[in-house]
Image (cartoon, rainbow, N blue to C red):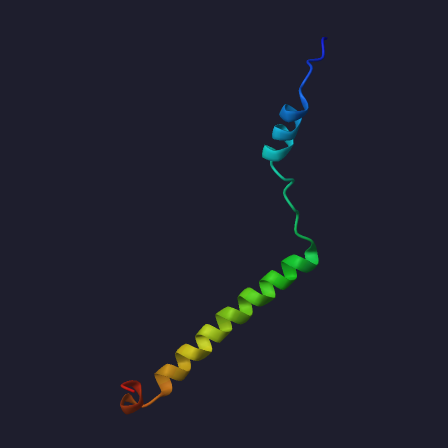
Length: 61
């Protein structure tokens, strides 16, 4: 097989447009993401309960 010659500009262009390797999340990162998602969900539920518990007079304010 014959190897094609590529100019430095062509090599630079190929490197520039090359897709970066996809980063694989570690178990620790997955656990952290799950923790933060759960914390945000619980926070939203707590805020919704607090709004429901307020008296109708306070809701208008």
